[in-house]
Amino acid sequence: MDVNALLTEIIGEFVIPDNFEVIIEQPLPTVRGERLRLKQVFQNLLSNAVKYTDKPKGQIKIGCTEENGFWKFGVADNGCGIKKNYFEKIFEIFQTLTSRDKTESTGIGLTIVKKIVELYGGKVWVESKVNEGSTFFFTLPKAKSQGDEKCHC
Image (cartoon, rainbow, N blue to C red; front, top):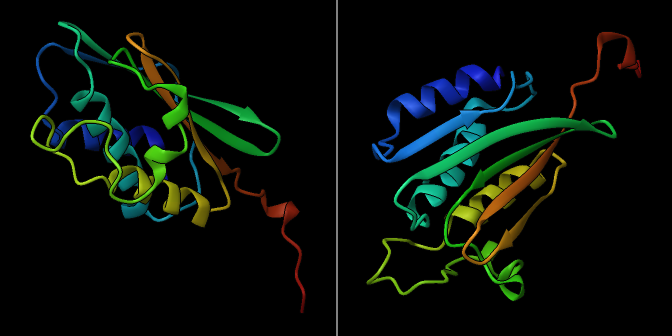
C-alpha cells in the first residue's frame, strides 16, 4: 500500500475547510496492510484534527520515520490540545472530551484507529499540549524483504 497515494485519495475525498493546510512532510513509505483499514486510520485522525482545531488557520502535518523495524507515523495538528490525564481515555470506545452538543462525535474513531493499528502489530499514542495541538503517533511493522521470509515447508 503506497501511503502517499492513499493520502492523496483521502484528502481529495475529505472536505477540508479552506482555512486548513495539510502538509505531508516527506515522501511516505509503502506499507503492508488492507487499503480500507489503513484508510480508516488516516481518515479518523484527519477528521479529529479538523474537528478539534480551534485556530483561525488550521494546520495538519503528516510525517513518518523508521524506527526499530517499524514505520512511525505522526499526524500533528495545531488544535486545542488534550490534557495529559486523558491520553489513554480517548482511545476507549464512546469517549469524547467535549459534549456531543458542541462537537459531532460518536467517540469511536480513535478506538477504531487503535484496533486497526494493534491488529497489524503496531501501537498508537498521543502527545499533546493544551492550546498548542496534538500529535497522534502510530507504528506499523516494516514489510520484510523477500530474503527475510523463511519457508517452513
